[in-house]
Image (cartoon, rainbow, N blue to C red):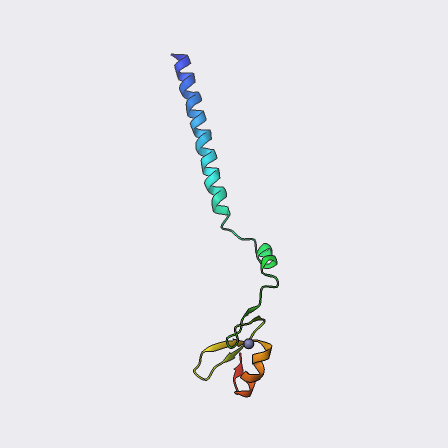
Length: 90
Ligand SMILES: [Zn+2]
């Protein structure tokens, strides 16, 4: 009788340890969604280049307000034409 009780207690303890390990696994998975700001900034360094609205080249853009009220980003080459058109930089 006592041996059966001890076996049941041992089985319960093993099940509890297994559940705790599984929970820790879930918790570990959840923490993967948290991004360290310093790591994110490091990964984004030098990635500020975007596609020019006019020629499509990837460059660091300056954004202008168009006549119709929308916003367009222009590379240094297209910026000259944008300023000739009288567009206002944002
Ligand atoms: Zn351009």
